[in-house]
Length: 81
Image 1 (cartoon, rainbow, N blue to C red):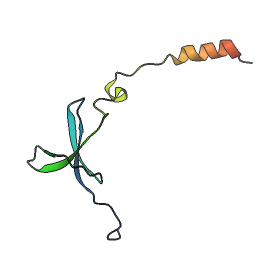
Image 2 (cartoon, one colour):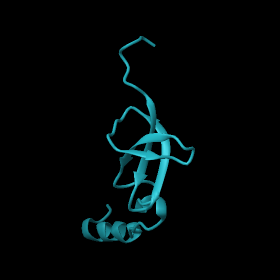
Image 3 (cartoon, helix red, strand yellow):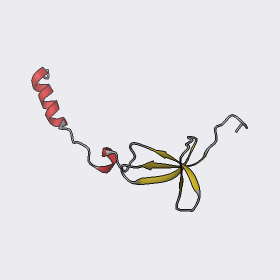
Image 4 (cartoon, helix red, strand yellow):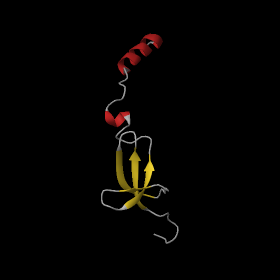
């Protein structure tokens, strides 16, 4: 890698306050807020609106669409030839 052209890549805590979940990973994002992590070190923290802990797709709370009914209605309306 060339020196001096890449952004600083450092540990960051991403926190989903709605789901009370936080995880430590590496990122180039910066933040003025910090948090003390379980290992005793202090890391920048970024609050996110949605994470895998609160997103309906990952939690199983998503709606199930009636695709079979939609196909039947389409065929009735426009016919299959």
